[in-house]
Every structure is written in structure tokens, then in C-alpha cells.
Image (tube, each protein chain N blue to C red):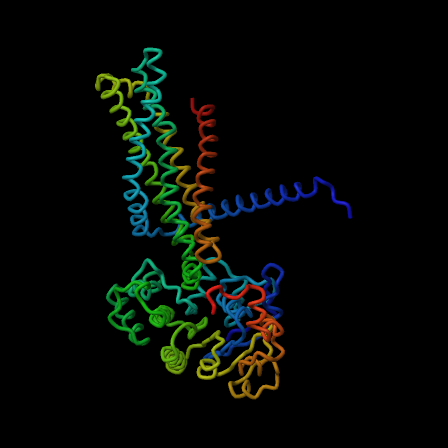
Amino acid sequence: MKVSRLAVPAAVAGAAVVNFLDYAGSLYMLLVQTVACCFRPIRWRLVLYELWKIGVQSWFIVSLSCFFVGMVLAFQSAYQMKQLAAEIYIASLVSLSMVREIGPVITALIVAGRVGSAIAAELGTMKVTEQIDALQTLAVDPVHYLVVPRLLAMIVALPLLTVWADAVGILGGLMVGTMKLDIQPALYWKMTMVPLVFKDLGSGLLKSVIFAVIICVVSCFQGFRTEGGAEGVGRATTQAVVSSFILTIFADCILTALIYFAWR
Amino acid sequence: MIEIKDLSKTFEGHEVLQHLNLTLKTGETTVIIGRSGSGKSVLLKHIIGLMKPENGSVLIDGVDITKLTGPSLDELRKKFGMLFQGAALFDSMTVEENVGFPLREHTSMAEDAVRQRVQECLSLVGLANIDDLRPAELSGGMRKRVGLARALVMNPEIILYDEPTTGIDPIMADIINGLIIALRDRLKMTSVVVTHDMVSAYKVADRIAMLYNGTIVEVGTPEEIRRSRNPVVQQFINGHAAGPIQEGLPDRRVLSRWPRAFWKSTGPRKDAA
């Protein structure tokens, strides 16, 4: 039988589309299940424990990273602004960039790498050692027990970390501006606050809530569908981080466009 | 009573269970034997509703568990206790928290009463003073016994054992067998044991069912199984390589030429004299 030259690429593309739709549908189903479970009694002790793991334990790495990012932003913009003799606008540039874009995205990526991978590895190990089956045999819904506390903790922790990351990033910029570029601290602070309006902080926080949902649902989903022992756990962890990164950046693009057009 | 009717399950085109029928009587211990990978654990997971079949039903006192979902499934599962092959203890919890978990989840018992019940169950399986240990600090036999204590803590009507004696030493295996018998005699629990350990099967069973090629090929008392004329049953219970069961066994022609054939394909070790 003669097979068209396009048949193989078409089959590969078709399989990829089917896999993507299956993945997206399964993620959506887990999200719906999780939201439905949020209306049942919540295990607040577990939420607090997850808040400590997600929020408190990520605090240092988020602070350090965003401090350096703020410094880098100030240095990079100084390079251009000096040519225009407009160094003072570095303060506004850093604050706006941090609050609207870099703070939420960098924080989300760090949390996806640190916490998302841990969630996928923990749930993946539970899956391959039949602990999730054990939960079910003990008449406990794994989504209600494992996903809901993580989701609630993530929705609280990520925006708080984002606000902190914004502040630390601005501080990093302020250090470069005052110590290296000789801008007066009071003037730098004034130029930091002048362009900021509620929309900037609000859009950043809205993004961080959406990113929190993405990271938690993707990581839990990858954990739940882990198969094949230690290798499977490693694969699930990698896929959780990669998928969280891609979906976070994709969602950032969509949200930025929506906020640009809809929130004027 | 547990009635399994016409149960079929397929994984990636391979029919693991094929129109399987089996009745498990209340208060009895039924042992399901069969080779590794024959679908024994899959059958057990259907009995407790962890898997959904393509066809057939599993009736628990007349209620079809395969049709239930959500809270009604959870309610029926409260009748069950299950001991997993690897015990499936929760890594993040201590022994005491593991055993007390179902009580804290499903009852409003006071904390003192929970602790007392946990101690009772741990004593029943011969463990004491290990409350604060984590599962990673326990030996294989201890893990199984903690898993058994957790399965018993809610006083289930039905208890499922997935390979209860696999991976533990013969003395500990005998202790676990003794516990299974004691639980049936003292608490009148309906027990289903999945195993390929014939010593254990003969010891604990009221009835033995042999699973082969996705169906039950023989059911009977241990004595009836010993005297069975079915060559599949005889090959399995006597542990013979020769017989009608040949799937997954090595090619005898290659085996008879080993190690010559092995050396031919891989070459002798260079450091060999």
C-alpha cells in the first residue's frame, strides 16, 4: 500500500494534539475537582503546614534572587539612561518592572522550581508506594486531603512572597542607584513611588494568584499520574517544573495583554 | 458476602481479568493464589473499588461497588481494611499517627480514646513502644504489622491482604499468618488474602481460589486444592517449571546450553583464568 509522504508527519502531529488535549483536559478536571473540594471542611492544620513549607521556606531564596534582579535591572537601565542623562528615571523603571512583571514572574518561577518539584516528587512517591491507594481505602479523598491544602497555601503564600519580592527588588535597585549612580535616596524613593498606582500592584497580585493555581495543579497532577518507580518520580518532577514554567510564562503573556486592554 | 460476577479488566490490550466469577463467604478466609502478574492484586483493587472494570460487577452485601463514586463509595469502604504489599504507610507520619489516622479522620473520638485504641491495635500485632518512629525506621516485618494495625483500627467487616508474607523472613511470615487466623477466629472478619506463598495459603485459608489466565480455574478447601486434578493447579502448588504454565519462563533450549551459550553471546570475562 502506498503511503503519502505527509502521512507520518500528520500522524505525529495528530498524536501530539491528542496528547495535548488529554493533558489539558485532565488538568482542567483536577482543577474542577479541587475547587469542588474547597467547599468541604478544610484541614486548616495542613494548610498552615503547607504555608510554612511554601511561604516561609521559600522566603530566603526569593529575597536573594529578587534583590539581585533589582540590582541588575538598575545597572542595565543605567547603561541606556546615562546616554540620555536621565538616570533618575531608573527608579521608576525598576519599581514598575518589579511590581508589574518581574516580581510576580520571578517569584512564580522560583516557587515552581523549589516547591512545585517537591510537590510532584512527594505525591509521585506516594503514588508509586501505594500511599494514595491507601488513602482511598481509608475512605479519604486524595484530592481533598493532598491538593486542597496545597492550593490554599499556595494562593496565600505566592502573592505575599510577590509583594516581598517587589520590595526587595526595589531595594536592590535603590542600592545601585544611591551607591553607584549617586542619586539621592529621598529622590530615588520619590521617583520609585510616583509612577506606581494600584493597578500596578493589583495586576501583579492577580498574576501571582493565577500562577499559584497553575503551579499547584500542574505539580499535583504530575504527582498523581506518576508511574514506574524512582525513574517515574524523577520524570514527573521534571515534567512538573517544565510544564509549570511554560504555563506560567504563557499565562503571563495572556494576562499582560488582557490587563493592557481591559484594565485601563 | 462478596460476589464477583463476570469481571473483566484490560490494560493496553492485555486482558488481565476475563469474565471472572467468584463468591467470598462472610466470616471465611479466602486465599487467591496465582503467578506474579496474573492479576491477583488487580482483583483485590476491584473488590475495594480502587479500579473500575470494563465489564461485570463486585457486590458487597448486595451493593455493587463498581457503580459507586464519591461519598457513597467512601461510606462502603469504611467496611474494609486493607494491608498493602509494601504496607503503604504514610512517610510523613509517625507509627502512632499512621494507625490513628482513620480514627482521627472519620470519628469524633477524644484524643485519649484514639491513643488507647491505637495502643490496642499495636499490641494486637505484637508491637509496642514504637509510636514515635517513622516508617523509614522500621523493618519490613514491622511495617507490615503497623499496616495491619492501621487496617484493623476501625474494626472492619472485611479485610484484604495483598501478599502479606512477601519479602519478610519465615518466622515473621508465620507470625503474620497467625494474626490472620486469630483475626478471623476472634473478630469473625471476612478475609481475602492474595499470595503466591503456598505455605501461607495452606495455613490461613478456609478456601483457596487459583487465578490463571484472567479467570478462576479452581476453588476449594486447602485439601481439595492439594488433591486437584487440574494440571495448572498441580504445577503451581508444587512449584514445578515443567507443566502447562509456560508464559514468562526462560527458553529451555537456551537454558540447557548455559553457560556455553551465554559465553558465546557475551564472551568470557577477561579476568577469567
